[in-house]
Length: 281
Image 1 (cartoon, helix red, strand yellow):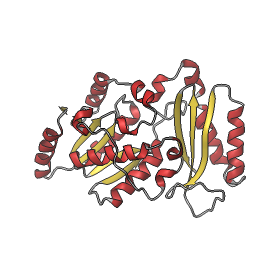
Image 2 (cartoon, one colour):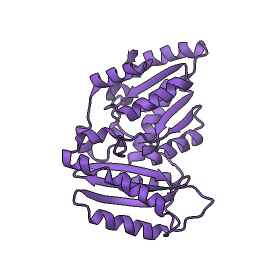
Image 3 (cartoon, one colour):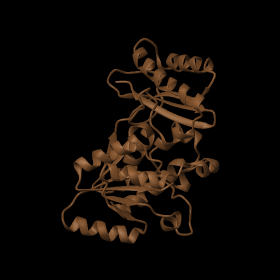
Image 4 (cartoon, one colour):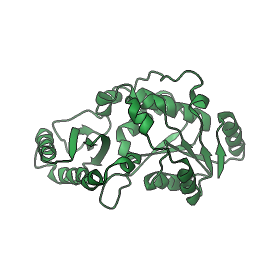
């Protein structure tokens, strides 16, 4: 696996690969890799000649600076994991390499997608996401880029950015990768206490029950039921639960049979914030 820290060197290498008619798949990450990330790398490997992974903890998408400081950094282990799945290229730039001396976000218009769910709780987050993903796309110039559906709102926002800025990359959304007990894999899981880790699979259990209840109650009744379940839970605190249209991410109160919906949830396990979602097809 080739490791690049300088964007100009990476661009030169990838331009050479493009001149040889090789396709490029890209998996942007913030490191602290787990099997969910590796599943994206494997998908990219299957469909492309060269697979590039980036590791960059992006400061402009953290509304909580303490969260940025505490974000796990496991570079040596990340390299071993990427080598185990035959990743071709790792891009590991410094903050200075990406932002120079101007660590700020560009402003984006995502047609309102950014104001739903996460956008209501994480001020400026999606401007930060848009800034770094657009920057990385311009450096890597991939044919396809792979994102997990755990961050479904982020996935839709990136698709919207690609559409509005006419970027020449296909965005591939990949299924959520889960632990054996159902907890969605996340780099944050490593920071959970033993007690919170044991309690966290409750989140997915609730989502599965919601999927079964669709058709028996309306969306507002389902939301009320979820809130009641979390009030009874001693370890987990519900931040939000909503049922939304997959395309617009607008919260819905009426569930129509010809539309695609998802249930979205954010929960605090102590001071660790966990998100998840499930398709309600």
